[in-house]
Picture 1 (tube, rainbow, N blue to C red):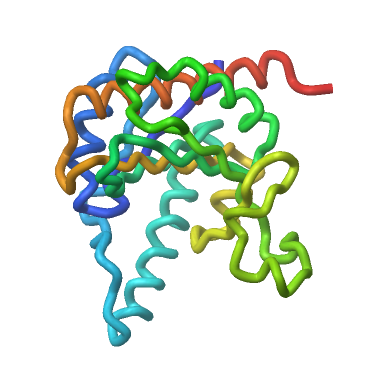
Picture 2 (picture 1 turned 180 degrees about the horizontal axis):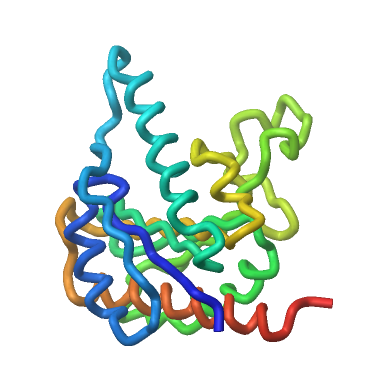
Amino acid sequence: MSKAIIVIGIHREELAFGERVAELLEESGIEVLRIEQGLSSKNPVFDDLFYYTTRHQEIYLQLRQQIKKRYDLLIDLHSGINESGVCADIFCKHVDLLDCLKTVSKKCSNIRCPLPDPIRLTRIIEDSEKIDDPAEENEEMDTKDQGYPFCLTVIPQAVWASKDFIYVGLEIYLPRPDAGTMEDWRFTAEIVESILKCDESLRSNPPA
């Protein structure tokens, strides 16, 4: 069985939400890494941008050093705001994993997920993979790549494209800027458990 870890608190305002989700995952076998001194999720002012960017890179590179060779799967949990209702973005470079996760949104009931498309799957790509078309310049998230919208990320490539583990970014959008509700935590925990099942299935039955 592969070893998985979920990291919470990269942004300190999101730590309380991450703690509640982690409590629901205690029996899943996933380990939890808490970042006690995370960054603020607020956009930095210009004068602080260099420090913020440098610290952001340092946190992720230190994270990579801590988990490489020890874990096969890293889930990077974040939270944001969507006043219309809870929903999620899942980011990963591995199309096979995204293909497996398509089933997640189909199992989500309208009662627990008030949006018509509560889970969006997005492929992380390198800058060099972008379609060389000026008309597409500001539409990375809307352009389909192997069936999925794609995006770039400021997370170091050594993390999201690691050869030692699979990186999955999970952003949960909550109706309010707080730690969420039990319904939100269960929604998130079910997504995490689905990621674990997909990862384990692909390792047991790798694509031809």
